[in-house]
Length: 200
Image (cartoon, rainbow, N blue to C red):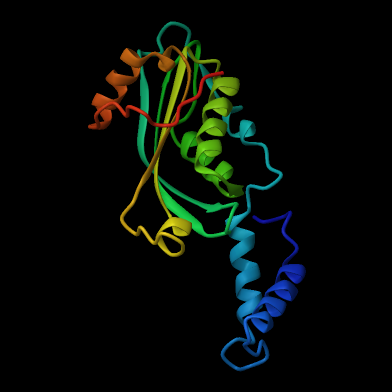
């Protein structure tokens, strides 16, 4: 975890930051803070430089016996906004129409986790998840719905602590509005008119 993260450089930078806000980084209260932040950043950014497609390499060929739809809902999501390095948190709901291969269900949350463990934008994260599944499984269609609240919106600027951002990314047959409506019904949600959406 966090193999690309230089903890010593982070700790040094945090010491400088503490001094820059007018605090003493050597005070008893703050002396260990740079190292704690370095450990936290190693966790937050553990996905940097890692390839999520390896998580789909153990897919199973099932021929025509794939079923019509696979939906994994309510995957816990945590990432860091690249603009302010503040967290955004929420849930991911992912559906795909299998072609000739399916993957173990735990692989899908792992893909979300790896791609989220980078400096991110929610819109890009959804597209990256959709593309990884599209490339790794060659399904007939993919739909990724992300719902998240953002620290940069809740804790600074407009301070809208109750707001939620919803984005949609799609590929193949699940880019079709009628197909999406069927998935939204399974998720217990109305179709998300006007949400961010993309198709390869």
